[in-house]
Image 1 (cartoon, rainbow, N blue to C red):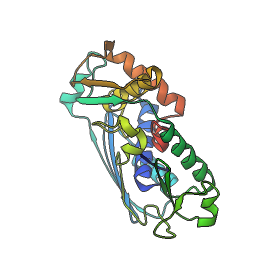
Image 2 (cartoon, rainbow, N blue to C red):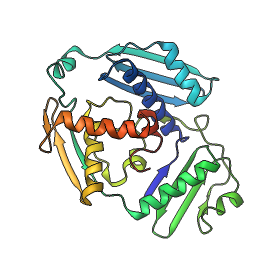
Image 3 (cartoon, rainbow, N blue to C red):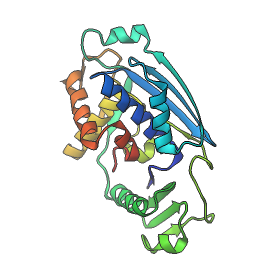
Image 4 (cartoon, rainbow, N blue to C red):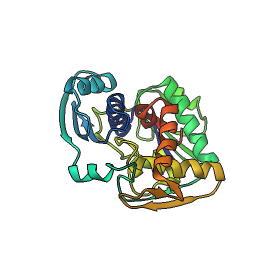
Amino acid sequence: MYEKVNPSHPDKVADRIAGAIVDLAYRVQENPKVAVEVLIGHGRCYIIAESSVEFDPEEIFRVVYRIMGDNLEVGFVQTAQDEHLSENQALGVRCGDNGIFKGVPVTNEQMKLTSLAKIIYSKHPSDGKYIIDGDRVIICQSNASDMELKRFWSSAEINPIGPWTGGPDVDSGATNRKLGSDMADSVTGGGLHGKDLSKADVSVNIYAWLKAQRTGKTVELSCAIGDSEVDGKPYAEIVEIARDYINGLGGFEKFAEWGLIR
């Protein structure tokens, strides 16, 4: 059983905005410290960013308008990273937070649904969410007719409550609220989006997931803030593994579109 949402779902739009802001930080500093929370919905977008980079608000507004359109109210608050947390990283790359993490091999069912979601989204790039549970497939896709959607999976249940428009004018969205879609059985504690690579929520989650795909076995890890080693590896090495993965996708915004299962 698995649910996948597409990049135009309001929660994923919030993730994408957060990811784009992290991308901005990495253009200014090689290893910024940044954490971004985004709340959107009904003509509004509110952002709080804690960062070692001082953002130009106009750049933030351009990110929001590019992703959501310009007919909305944007609120932006930024603050410097806490000085005590900054000291944690002063002498080298160490875990930026506490956490427990799990990587689980992706199943054929999860990949099948993800492929379906991406095919539908390529034709209908608006809010959509999809479920697979054995032989049962549910397609909830906004701004598309039942006849069009039946072409993708003839036996699927299509928009059970009827046609809908979707998007942030219908529903609110918040950062890291669709981790089940992004991680499936790997979901444990911290969120993937809106954070720099020093945060274990990002790097250790990516590392554990990649290791699970490589070994075909479930991986369970934990760390404490300030740890210099995780899973027998220097934390700096885990950060670089995650950096290579994010860069290979094209950045944090691209990562946020589909998460780890893509």
